[in-house]
Image 1 (cartoon, rainbow, N blue to C red):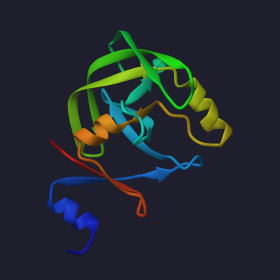
Image 2: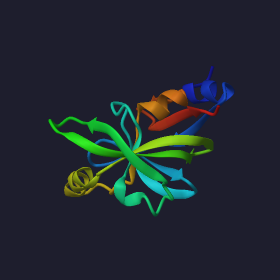
Image 3: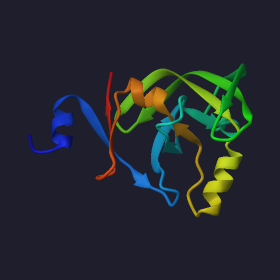
Length: 147
């Protein structure tokens, strides 16, 4: 076995290059409903999410949700849900992906204050788990297994 990448490729994984931003998060380009957006990876986020302001741009058919999200802060966050989206990360494409919509303005304000790119969303553990993600932190690659 030559490397982790070779082993994973032989076992059906696709490799996506990650970019580290000034806040030490990994950024990736993700297509949602055929529209590209800038996302960060957050293994601690239970659900993948997008901002309310992306509903029109990303053709999200959002509906009200009684679910409240929570983050590192003490307050609960209002949410909506956008069901049955088509998501593409690198060569991996999946349909019928549900995304939680939240207000990302406070996150983008924090990113902007650190000279980081603004984001359209967060790829969380739900997607990473379902695509059997492996992160090579040293070489800055995300490996996903297509279903």
